[in-house]
Structure formats: structure tokens, C-alpha cells
Length: 304
Image (tube, rainbow, N blue to C red; front, top):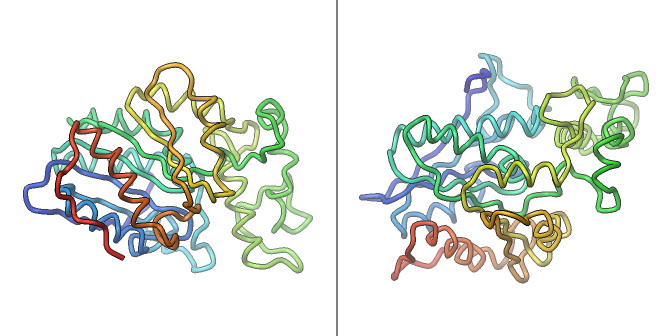
């Protein structure tokens, strides 16, 4: 990537493909997660190329500028902005290689990144001579991890300075609370170490890590709508992490490019550990195929 990250990717290409699905996995997953393999099978049966890649500091994407990250930093993303930039660059790579219509899909952590970077992805694909025909957001966490009790006006103004998540793993001497070196304080554990990195990096605005601006739900949805491509947010009815489909719909007013769909009975990890993952994938692909104006009449069911 342009910023020095070396990303691992895998491609599943059926004979005579008709389209490409670019997929970005969730936190602490990889291209070897079961959900990715299920998507690969679903794509093969429908004539889609699947390109999946390991998010930076995940899976086999552990090298930046020739330096391999220590194991303790696995899963510690730099920011959602970096995830978004990588999605755009990967879209350009995929379009140049396959020269086919493109659908972009992301889950959980990177679905939040895709929300505010869809326009960048569309522009990158267009510059490469391609076309994004749709975007799919699977179980995106509440943008910025804003608690449901925290209104956007408060979140935008003061949360980066007050959120306990930013300091939960840092020694007290570290100020203003961000912990870029991921230094553990007394009586802290690895789970809190990950939280100290993940939470502020999802909270902070698109200008980097100075903590002066938080990204709000409303601002992200405005950015998403400006991309001008059809998109759908899928949420599970048993997912306590994802912002509700109803709340998202309130921010999706205006151009009818963004829709929401609740999958009954699905949990947050709707692709890998969910017992009904196969059925959920079938519902998701009904929408994906609709982006091309048809549904494959004899698609093979996804296997476990």
C-alpha cells in the first residue's frame, strides 16, 4: 500500500466470472476465517470472483515498511482511516486486474471503515477504469463506538477527551490519554491493551490521532450517501453490538441509495460462528445479485 503496509490477500476465481466481490473481514479475523470461506463458496456458485485481504495488523498482514510487527500488536489497527484508505487502494488493484463490475463488502470493524470511505472506494475504482455497482455493510458497530446514551453533539465535542476507553490500558503518567505505544500499566491485561488501541482509533476523526475531532453517526452517514452508489446495511436481530437498523434508517433519509435490512436471529458474527450463517449469506447474496439486475437461478447453497 502507499503507506508502506504489505497486505496479504487471497483470490477465488471461477471460470468465466461476471463480477468481483472485494471483502474486508472484521476485528481479529483473517482470510482464513470460516466466514470468508463460506463467502468464497457462495461466490464460486454464482460466477463471482472473491478477493479477500487481511486488514493491517491482522492475519498475515503484519509488515509495514519492511518491518514486521511484534505479536503483541496483532489486531491493533492504526485507525479506521487507514482501513478506509486500504479499501480504496485494494479496489483499484482489483479493478485493474479483473476488469469486471465490483461490489465491496465489509464486516464489523471494517464495515464502519467502509461507511465513511465508500466515496473514496468509488473514486479509486473509477480512476482505475472500473465501476462499483454496490456496497454491503455487515454489522457495522456504532460509528466511533459512541454509546447509545451519548448524543452526537456531545460525542463530537468532548468524548475524545473524556472517554475512559482511551486510557484503560495506559499508565497514569501517559497523557492526554491516548496510548500509541500500547504500553501496559499496572494490573492491566491483553484485553484492555487491545481496547486501549481499538476504541480511540475508532473514535477519532478523519484527520488522524490528535483527538480534537470525533466522527459522528450523522457525519458518517452523510459521507456514505455522497458516494452515490447503492448500499445496504445488514444487522442481526440478536446483535447487541451493532447500531440498530431502525436508528440507521433515521440517518438514511434523502437520496434512496442506502437501505437497511435486519436478519432475524443473526448475531454480530453473522458469517463465521453464527449457527444460521449459511441462511444469512443467502439473504445477503439476494441483495448482491440484485446489483446486477438478476438472481442466479441455480445457485448452490453455501456449505458449512
